[in-house]
Every structure is written in C-alpha cells, then in structure tokens.
Image (cartoon, rainbow, N blue to C red; front, top):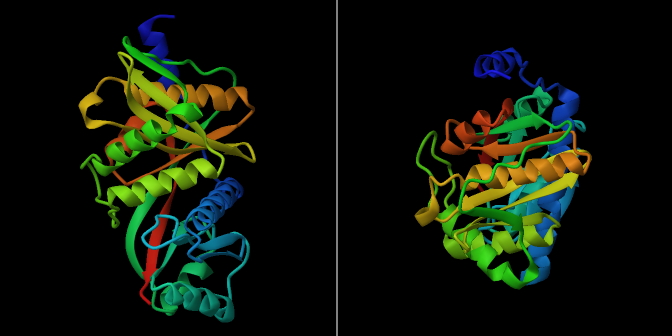
Length: 289
C-alpha cells in the first residue's frame, strides 16, 4: 500500500462514537476497579475505610491521601437520594476527607444538579478516550527496547519505576487538581496490582525504564497507568507499552480499550496519535467535610 493510500485510509476512519450504553459500561468497570483497589488498600493498612455501592457506582475511602478516595460510576443507575448522599458524606467526614465525585458528562443530568444543590463545587475535568479493538494489533518495539509481562521477582522494581514516572509528570495541558507524594503513589501502585491488573515492564538496553498495566472486564481493556523514568523518555517506550497492551487485549477478546487523561496533556496527545478518540469528559466535583 502506498503512503498516500494509507493516509487516505486514516483520514476516512470514523471517530468512535460513545453513546450512554457504552459510557455506562466503562463507568461500571471503573467503579469495580476503584472498589477492588480500595479493598486492597484496606487489607494492606488495616486502618478502616469503606466501599459503599451507590446508584450503580461506588463511594470509596481507601486510606488517607489515596487516589482511590472518590465516588465513581454515578449517573447511570438512578439518582441517589438525599439520605444516601448524606450517609456517604458522613462516612467521608468521619475519615476527615472531602467527598470527590467524578461524574461523566453523559450521566443523568439530575445527578449533577443534586450534587451542586448540596454544595459540591467543580474543581477539575478529566477525559476518557477509547479505541475500538478488532483483529490483531501490531506490536511496536523500537530498537533497544523490550516490553514483556512483569514477573513477581521484579515487583519492587516495577513499583519503583511507576512511582518515579508518575512523580515527574508532563506539564502540557490543564494541570491536575491533585498531587500525591511518592510514598502515596507507591502504595497506590501496590493496590492497583492487587486489584488484578496485568503488569508490563519496558527495558531499555536491559535496564527497566518504564512500566504499565491494564485490566480486562466486561469486554473493556482499562489502561490503568503507564510511566517512563525521566532518564529514558522520548525513546518510544510509551508507544511500545501501549501497543503491547492493545495487542494482548484484542487477543483476549476485548472490544474496546479506554484510558483516562488530563485535558490537553501529553498523554492525551500520545494516545490520540495511536487512534484513540475522545469519548466523554468527567467533571470532578468536591464537597469539603
């Protein structure tokens, strides 16, 4: 195929359309992941916490400072009533934490109206992007780079490179509203691993330079994080980690891969270059205790 034909083929590709049914499926598996990671954190720390089912989603408190302290998946299983929301707010208050709700813009608008009526305030947005999976996906491996499943014998190295990469994020796009210390990131990586994700390691000239993970549920491949150590960036490691996960997800029968990014970030730019489309945006709403 000539380069011109390839370009015309890409140009003619229709963007992936996300209806409320697809958004509901993605939000459901997101809520499941948050609940599993929260449970893993509570087992590890034994300091209390909770994961409360709510209107098709989950309200989770894993431990102090955890990124899994949030309400996810609301808006597709009814509108939570004042009594239910009051119970959740009191549970977070007892833990000394604000209530953070991540609400998809395709969710029932009545949920957002109820939350803002109770004093929740908009603090940020995040984007959910998706790629339809069908057939085989090419594995892209630049020279000097090896990507493979990460074994238990190198778990600590995997956690370390993930934490190092996340602790030095790109600065393109809209800044996130949260920052986490390295020790919190390391604990979160352990909890996400215990939640049943598949881990990958990227080696550059034999040295672990990056790591990634993904989870499969209900036909959805959730790309649950990828990081490259600063010294190894701009070498194609992120592309290699992404292509390996997409190939394995497609081979396992997933029909869609999804990833969450900050709006306008380098991460969003990278996955859009690989064919991902913007599916919907989540509004992040917070109520202080």
